[in-house]
Image (cartoon, rainbow over all chains, first blue to last red; front, side):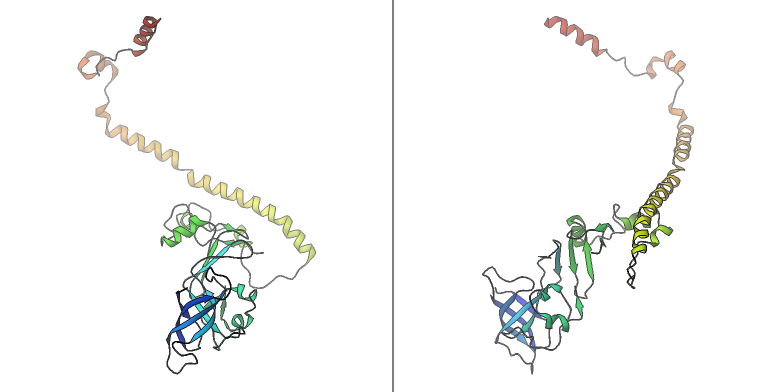
Length: 117
Length: 166
């Protein structure tokens, strides 16, 4: 909650603030879906400032355990905006994303991403 | 399953161990344990930290060029499975490992070789330079001022005190 995350797609938003984790009350971690409010946006983008949007956390500085027991962490906290059905709003994804998204059924984001870590 | 190498100390990372850090330009840094991860976070250079493989290689402590290292290498082309080949490879692994260990031991031996002579040379030099500090025992006996004050024998006094107690 209240975490400001970078938006790493071309949906038009620059920064969003987490206002709710979709599942659970402890906040969101890598791969989780959040509800967020758009704090900064590019002019003429799909998403406007002040809108409430859904997003998938694709990078988190907090380490997350992998299925084999090792851990993974990233440089920053970043989201990709999605609609309620889980389809990404933008058409591109920047930077690396974890392969755990496949487990969360966000295959579309994975296919858009250039680097999979 | 792939066995990765630690970015900091170059040790093998077995599945389920360690942590990996993904930088924003998608470079992956893998660490075998928290020690290496912490050292990375402190921005230490592995070439300057003495216990890492990088340091030892750089400073000629370990064997660097050897044909046995050629086997353990990342190959871009996947090998087609062949039962005989796999069997032979498994056999060869043990043998190559043995060869490598003996060669490494030999390398270290060769590296240590000059040490004893060097030490002897240094000792000789020191003796030559500081000979004035050493006096012959005969001189010491003649001139009592050169010797240290006579030590009291402690063991005897102790024995006496024991007797007193009894």
